[in-house]
Image 1 (cartoon, rainbow, N blue to C red):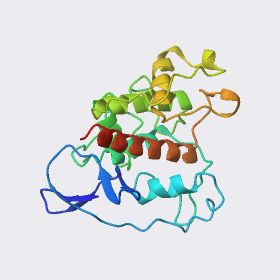
Image 2: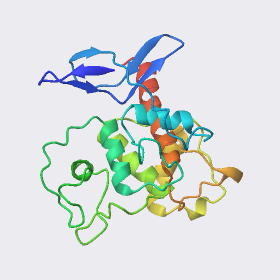
Image 3: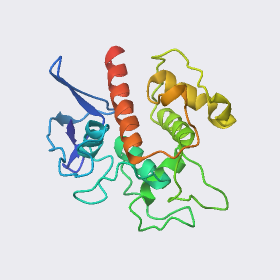
Image 4: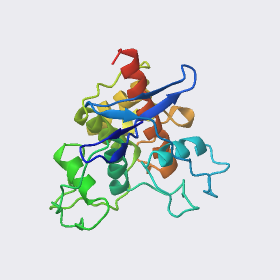
Length: 233
C-alpha cells in the first residue's frame, strides 16, 4: 500500500500484506490520506539465501525496505543484528519521518549515521534506553530477550495491544530469562511473534541473526494487520 503525503510524495506502507485468499490488500494506518497500490519487485539476486529456511521472510522485509542487503547480492542471513539495525527496521516499519532529528543525544552515535534519526525516535518513544554514561552502543548485538523487550515497547509506542493468540508456554530454560524480560518474552510468545527453539528452549541470551529478525518482523507485520482485520478496524 502507498499514500500521498502533504508534499505530494508517494510513501510506501511497510505494514501491508496482500491476502491471496480474499484478494484484498490489508494494511494498518493512523491517518486519512489518498491511498493506492504500488509494486516493488522482490530482490531475488541475493546469492546466499536461495536455500535458506527464511528466504521468503527475508524477501518480505527487504521488499518493504525494513532491512537491506549487505550488498546487492549478499544478505548475510546468519550475521548478527545490532541495536542500530534493529531500531532502524522498527522505525521503517512504523513509517516514521526522522528528517526532523538533526543531532544525536548519544556520544557514540554520529549525527551523520543513517540510523541516528531512528535511534532518537526510538529513545524519545521509550522503545529503547541508553547503555549508560550517555551512550547507545549502536554496534552492540541484541539477544533474543532484548529483542522481545524492544518489540513490546514498540507495540506500546504505536498503540498496538498484543493479542493472546497462544496459551502461555513454559520454556525449558525459563529460569535463564532475565527478570526484566520475562513479561516481554511471555507476551511475544503468546502473540506468536517469538517461538521456542529445539527442545522447547527459548535461548534468551543468544544473539539474534538477520534471518531471525526477518522472521520476527514479518510475523509482527502480519499480526498487526490480521488482528486489526479481526477487530473490524
